[in-house]
Image 1: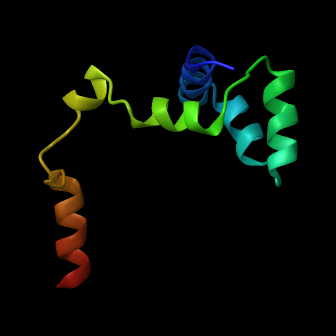
Image 2: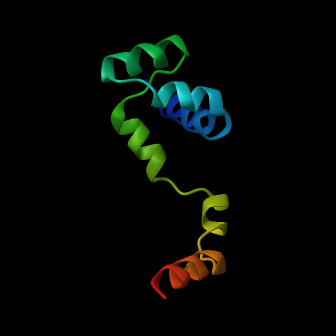
Length: 81
């Protein structure tokens, strides 16, 4: 089991829509484990959590200091007024 496998899984979930859809359609942990093993991934829950907890430079570039983008602010304002 490895962090590297977890990282590859996370990247594939972000870039491969068909794979992500198939993964999200699974109903049980057993189904997910079988699907992941058949897809060549081998990592623990802790390793996945560690990878998901790491922010990449590209993630940091998208941080806006907690402010909503203008379009979201407009939608919220329109729905309230």
